[in-house]
Length: 432
Image (cartoon, rainbow, N blue to C red):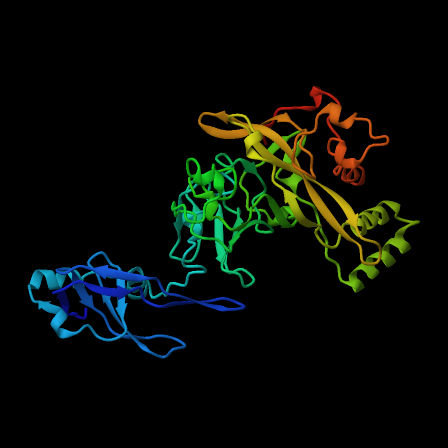
C-alpha cells in the first residue's frame, strides 16, 4: 500500500469538487461541483494529480477523512499546511480505500455507472413483488432479495439516465404479486431520464403544491420506491407491461406443475412452435398428399404438424394489472394467451395478449400446493376489471371513449375473450 502524506491546514482554504465526465451516446457531460470550504485544522490525504479530459490540465486532488475528494488548480502552498507525522494517523488515513479501489484490488473489476447521479437500485422497486432490497452476484448481476427476479442495467438511447430490464427465470411465485411462467423470453423495462436525484429533499425546483405544504413523496405505486421526492423525478417510463415472445413449454425453467381452471400450468401459458425449413415443410406436404387415401390417419397427423405455428407470437406491451386492485393474499396469474393476426398478408404477424386470473395460494404443510381462482374478469387489453354491466352497456350512437372499455372491445372480438358465464366457471386447483 502506498503511504501518502497527511496534511493539516493552517488556515481556511477553498477547494472545488473534482471534474467528472459522463459519456453518453450523443454527448458528454462535464460535472464539477461548486466550492468546498475547509477550516483550519482539517486533515487531508494528498493524492496523485489527475489530468482532466478535454482541457488537458492537471487537477491536484486531496481526500478528507470522510472520503470526500476535493481539488485545486495548483498544489497546496506549503505555508498553508503542516505535515502530520503521527504514525497512527498516517496509517489510519492511508488505510481508506474507495469503492473503485476495492473493486480493482479485490475483484479485478472497474466500476462504470450509467448515470452517477441516479443509482438505479437506490431508486427502483421490484415490479413482481415491490421489494426494495437487492443483491449483486459477483458484481455481474442484481437480484431482488425477496422474489429473486433478475435485473440488468443499460444506458438510454443518449439521454442522461438509466434503463433497467427485469426477467424472472428463477423467481419465487409465492412472494411475487404476478405469477408468470419462468422464462427468459419475456421481460419488463423501466426508464428514468432527464431527472434530478429523487432522494434530494430540497425545494429549489418544487411545484406550488410542494412549496406550500409537505414535500410531495412517491407512494410506491410506480416502479420507483416510496419516499422519493416527486418534484425531482424527470421522465419516467414505468414497467407496467411485459414484452418479448410467448415461450414454448420446453423453454421454461420450472419445477412446479399445477392444474388451474382445468388446464396444466405453466403449460397453459406456453404455445407450441415448430420452425421447419422450406424443404422440410415441402417434404411433409408431399407425404401428406401421398398418404391421404391409403393412410388417412397418418396423413391427418402430418397435417396437424403442418398447422403448428413456425414462430412464437410476439408480445407487445402486455399490460400488468394494477396490484392496488388486489385484496390481501391475492395474486395475478398469467393463465394462457390470446392470439390474433396483426397487419395484412403477406406482411401480417401473430401477436399475443395475456389472460390474467386473480388467484390465492393453497398452502399445505407450509408449502405451496396450488392456486385457487378468485375471478377471471381482467381485461387482456387494459388490465382493468370488467363488470357484467360494462359488457352490456349500450353502444349505439355513443363514442367509444364514453363506453366502459370502449377501446378494448375490438380486441375482445379479435381474440374471442369474454367474461365467464357464471361463478361455476371459477374453480380451485391442485398439484399434479
